[in-house]
Image 1 (cartoon, rainbow, N blue to C red):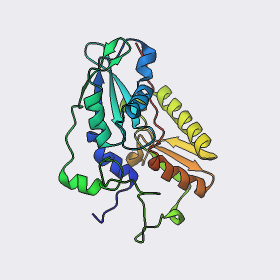
Image 2 (cartoon, rainbow, N blue to C red; image 1 turned 45 degrees about the vertical axis):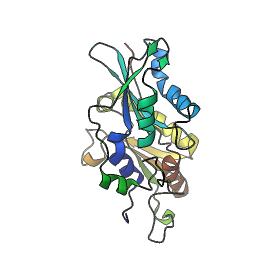
Image 3 (cartoon, rainbow, N blue to C red; image 1 turned 90 degrees about the horizontal axis):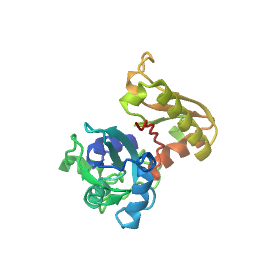
Length: 239
């Protein structure tokens, strides 16, 4: 396809096919919170990843009707989600044998979506090589660094419930700002757009990070996709 998707668009379009639901987590709160690190270590050890780097983008914890902790795991590629769905089931984690299913909103990607996503790196199949620099390319294939601004937009950092919680929102913003500063460079300001912000409905739930230098902002914007390293935040209260 001649259409090129932006990184956020590719992630959003494929999201429903990149998530798995892991149940029967152990009661130990430390193991529950550490589940993302466990999957990130396990997948490459079993040769289930499609490339180097962390394969888990985000883990959201939920509580089932029976009071058990459930993890919704978002993988960076559709292929890795399929591998995790097959390989984690029955695996012993702590004192529990994990069970895995697709989330309720799961549907396979259509042929048209697969064609559109090919080359973005979110499919994880042969021929789906991520761009060397960025999905935002000019007609001659060169990165559009000259169009970089001081501000980048980060998505999918909080659930709706966490966004409504003042403490979660504050912690997310502080962590995101600190992470961007340590990984990329000086941050001038950062804003988490919430429902009470007027005339900003399209940005609700997103963090806008303003760097002091466009070069640093461009680096942050491209590297967060290349390494699938968009900083995600998860704040969970274990009961």
